Every structure is written in structure tokens, then in C-alpha cells.
Amino acid sequence: MLSGQRRIGKIDVHHHIFPPSEIYDKRGENARVGWRTPAENLPWTPEKSIEFMDTFGIEKAILSYPAGFPPSTGPDATKIVRNANMYASDLCKRHPSRFGFFASLPQPSDPEVLAELDYALDVLKADGIALSSSYGAGSSAKYVADETYDSLWQALDDRRATVFLHGCMTPSSTPYPHETLGLPVCEVPNETFKAAAHLVVTGKKRRYSNVTIILAHLGGCTPFLAPRVAVLSNHMGCQLSPEEIINDFKTFYYETALSAHESTLEMVMRSVGPERVLLGTDFPAVSERMINWYNEQLIEFLTPDEAVAAAVLRDNALRLLAQST
Image (tube, rainbow, N blue to C red; front, top):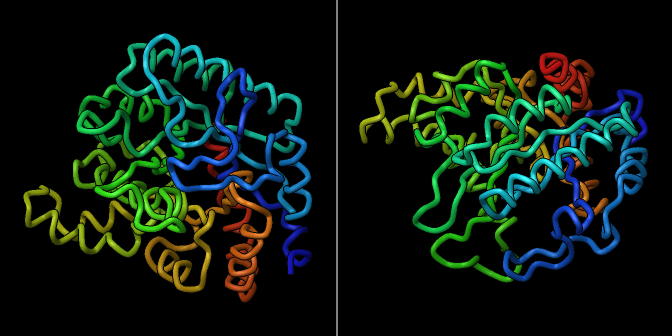
């Protein structure tokens, strides 16, 4: 099941750091969002990730902190981000062949955000930047393409940066529909889609076209809803034609964490092609058993074409990482 692909040396672009509590305390069951992090993955250590990677034939994992990090604003949050990125960078220095990382930033409206961007890319040598779908809470929340954040997008564009975009655990009108449908199950993929759609219909995706954007979890429901956005948003005043909107959705990259199934893979492959699909696992937020279920679906889907399998499991990520150096 796994051995046939192990030789490829996979690259996992969706692999989280659950850092020491002195940096950021986020571990264990979180009843607020309706999710139980697998007990065997806590407390997380880099050694646990390496053991998991060896089991699944993953040569390298690109680490990132969970979406919504840090949960606050101001000088304390900026300090938390700096310390967290330094911790991630140190992990990469200690395990250079096994880890890279997408750096976190203060909230995009923070006056220090551009300085932290420069520090992360120039000093810490991050492979890219992790952004959340939105920032702020309640009625003050703004999606990532809000004009308030244009200076950050311009800086990312100038640097031809790679961005890993992950949906926030933002509750909708009800906290979540059922005890088995917590925010990570339902709202995270919805928020990923809304952020992607916001980037497209505002014209930011094409304005900042030098930024490579990876959508977490195959973009959530993005491949399915992109045609709906194309026609209805145009009707509501989006200046882009339906065809332009569809084409802009095709310029994202999509990674497979918790999303690989014949139905979803067929849709995204037809939408963007295998050259824009990447491997992701979401370890340690989920168990090896859950990851293996999706891995089985992915390997079965990819097995008929060795070139496509190599592209999705390794080569596409290698190309993006080479661009970031």
C-alpha cells in the first residue's frame, strides 16, 4: 500500500508545529471548536513528526503553525510570532533534510508585519508565509484580500513569495451543526473557499500574480463552487468576466490534506491539472489512521500514472521550494 510510493521521497506541505507551551499553548481537546487532537500526538515533538514521516515515506515536511496564530494583536503577539518563527527555523537547522517551514506573521494590519516578513524570509530563510483566511473577530474581522492588507500583498508580490493559505476556525450563525461536525470539519474548508473567492473577485489574485498561493485541504469547496462564483459574482458587479474568474481560480495550488478521494481528486485534476496539486497530511492535528485512509485513496488514484504520482507527491513541491530560495 505504501511501499510502492516510498521510494519517491514525498514532500508534505501541510504539517503543523504544536509548539512548547512557553511559546504558544495550543494542545489537547478543544471543546470550543469541537475537535479532539489525537492523544498519542501530544505533546508534539519533532521526533514524533519524523517517526510519522518515516512510516509514510515522507522525505520532507514544510511546517506551519495552526491557522489563527497568534490569537491576539499588539506587541505581545509580534513577540510571540518572532519567537515561534525562530523556533521553527531552529528545527529546520537541526533537521535540514527533513523540515522546512512557512513562517507566521503578526496580523496583516500590525505595523510590524512587513519587518517580520523580511526577517522571516531573509534571516530565518523560511520557505514561504502561512496566512489565515481572515483576521479579527466578529464584525471587525476582515478577509485576507481586504484593501487594508494591500501593503502586505504588495510586499509578497515583490518578493515572489509562496503563501500557504488555511481557513480559520470561524463559527457561522450556529457554533457547528452537530457534535461530530465541529469547526475543523465544516467551517475550515468553507473559510478556505471564502478567502480564495475573495482574492479572486477583488482582483487581488491577478494583481499580485507573482505570489504563489497554496490552498489548504484542496481549497475546501473551492473547485465545486468556483463556477457559481464566476457567474453570480459577475452579476453582482465583479468586474471580471465569468471566464476570467474561472481562470483565476485555476492559478491556485491545491494540497490534499484530509481531502483525497476519487471524487475530489478527479474534480481538482480536471480544474487545475496535476501540476498544481501537492501532498499534505495535517499531522499532528489528526491521527496516522485518519491520514492513512486519505493516503490509500490518493495512492490508488495516482497509481495508473507514475509521472503524475511523482509530480503530486514530490516534484511540484520541489519546484515551488526551489523558487523560494
